[in-house]
Image (cartoon, rainbow, N blue to C red; front, side, top):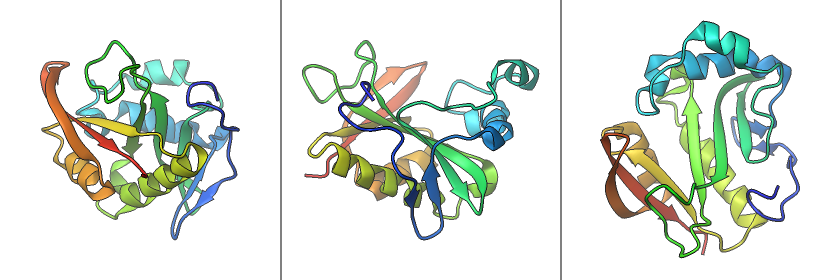
Length: 178
């Protein structure tokens, strides 16, 4: 897992009260296509992609890579969480070497409003804190994305700065287990 440091991947599935964070499987393909095709999900993420394009492009086992967790509820994928290195060329950093890990998430609309995102993100952050103690995690979201702003606050991210990117105001925050 060179992207995040010396961590074995995939980890043992992470279980919360209601969810399982696990590696992607072939049965998740349809849910991955939904995540990228639905305008509600992609409103603040560059917009939806055409479903026919996704049907051709998404591999049989989508998203199987270090740093990507599938969020499973009762045997079905309801979303994803990613922990990736933030691109050094983008604005928003808390370290001089720009080597921060960035938290990302997408959930299907039927999972919204039930606390699943907070539960899953907290579990992923706890795992990360155990795997890489003391490493900061950053989060960037459009200020117009009220749900994501509330989630960032609930998870304990603190604002570092705001800036304009992708034609919109962005909120940039940091979380640390220390």
